[in-house]
Length: 295
Image (cartoon, rainbow, N blue to C red; front, top):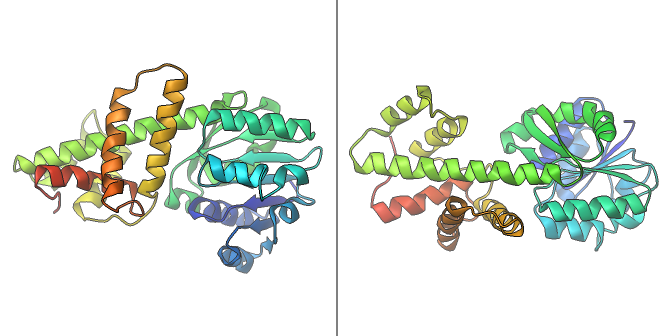
């Protein structure tokens, strides 16, 4: 790839675009709020005034946005990206969204002679900044192999999942597991605290047993330190929970645990914690139990 356009300089996009620059790729950056591109420009990126300008002459156009609506606005709406893409260009959408949206994108780009991959990522701010994401990809396998050197710059591992939409599907399956682990962690730590157990001792057991998890280790330690710095905002976790609910409903698959977790997340959002880290919904469980999990 000779030239990359990266659209969307949110928490994830900034880190990924920065790593592409570090790897020597020429990057043109665009963001709706233009000043968010400043750190990338300081690092050597060009800045475009519009998605169309960013895509002009790019071999690869990449974006990671907040939700389906943002993608639809970029591609078909005010962003006018679809009108700007040229035959032969490659487009990679790294957003967490419904598989139907990915398939709609693939069809629209194909009609323009462009090629498309859905490639959402697991990980948050630290992994994006450190090039340690886990990427799941849907689309043509030959195209995946062509784009793989770029994806490897951004990731610890990449995984080809099948045709367009399958990367998006795997992302929702994975996010269901993440939410379930956070809910389980919260319930367990609140119960342990109410029972008089030392939270640090509880985490010590969780770290070595057959139910250990990096999420239990990392989020558990942040919880007992009362650290809710935003790595992945709770409001985005609710967005993903809503996507999972819709995805499961479309396939007529029961997901009762995910539904229960979504209600806990909603309760935390209604308390005004939407901008805090996703783990902040555990505070909702603490309030109901009348305890605080801390050192």
